[in-house]
Image (cartoon, rainbow, N blue to C red; front, side, top):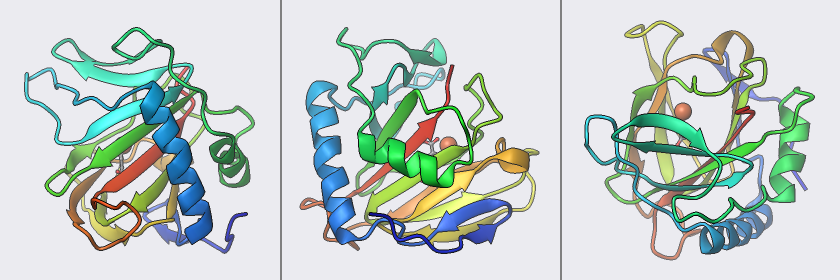
Length: 204
Ligand SMILES: O=C(O)CCC(=O)C(=O)O
Ligand SMILES: [Fe+2]
């Protein structure tokens, strides 16, 4: 099911190139469409009042959310419906790469359109930082930037392609990272172009 090989290491981030082959990517895309049918994507707002350029939704017990009151995990989709279950294929993927005995209870699904990006940040809203964040990329290529655990340090970048998996845990669990730009329509996976990034987290 997975195309396992030794990961590249970029500043402690483990990058598994093409961990999902084309068939597995299509299957996962279908499962994410089902997630988005139950829990439609929305545009989060930052505490500053600015809207994020990505659209997002979640699966799992809790979903990541942000509005003028700041970031947090919430137990229901903003519409009041329960978040759908995390697709089994992603739980299987987690078991293979995470090295963590706990299962993820939150799966954030970010959709990047042509001009979307994500500024440098740390993923530090989760309660259990002994487990890594596992990221899966689908669709268009993205320039992913990685820094250290201190703000404003040296950064390096790598292009993430459809099917790539990135694991960041241990010493780099709180490393700064972000997405500078996507290469719109570089992949044919999404008929209208764009990129999906999934992050699995142990949030509670
Ligand atoms: O889109 C990506 O590759 C990273 C997403 C991310 O850092 C996040 O959702 O916290
Ligand atoms: Fe992140």
